[in-house]
Length: 174
Image 1: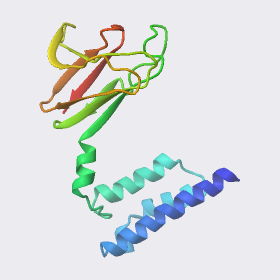
Image 2: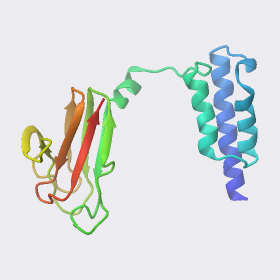
Image 3: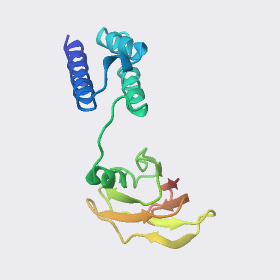
Image 4: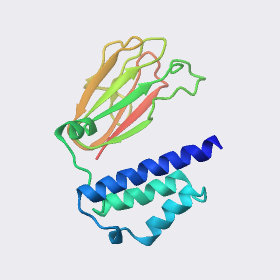
């Protein structure tokens, strides 16, 4: 019962967003394809997943049926990405990999590594054969410390922790 009321709440919120978007952008209901309307009904009935329903909303946004205004602030938020060094990352037998392990970003994005592990770590850039290079290299990051680097050029950038060399990660810049 609780799950169904949550679905109805999500559905109500999504329809409210649609109505506000249609009103603000002077869109008409006829511009919404029937399959999107059916997805909304089926989502409310529990016949399709939230992912399928959200893909229908994404279709409306991608095709200009719903227009979301962007601001300078939201654009700058997109230009940052975070990689978490999770607790347990230091342990060779742990599954505490960097999260995400391969971060995919656009050029000009600032990547922030955040150490949430209980021990210090470093971020050391490597070339394609694993040799440390002088591109982005942090000092020792204690628990809670952060390190930032802005990637200006496309490419694949490898890094590792010099204290725990079995922990490697990748930043892929488009």
